[in-house]
Image (cartoon, rainbow, N blue to C red; front, top):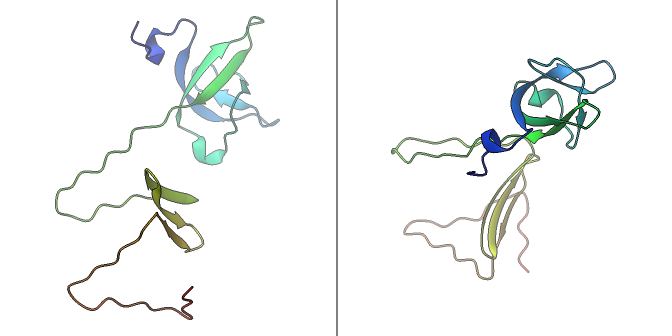
Length: 128
């Protein structure tokens, strides 16, 4: 057994088809209201999900499968988008972009180096 969802007994893959009037997620193919272990919203419709059946036969949505993030460096501009927050983390360093426009750069030491002008510009600039 390789640990993949296809090899787990009793776990199936499907697509989120929508929501029942009571808000329960509907699984494509089954079109049965399912109880869920995760919170899903309208933006998740069409996403691949893993689900199983409870002992009483009722479907239970286990979660949404996420596609791996692949960024190809081909010399052209690449766009990575997130709806709420995008964070790059490596050890104790991170760069976080927030949807309200805030940018956070954190680390044990931060170096800004430029062979040309290195400008700091803003409505106000606070040092220390």
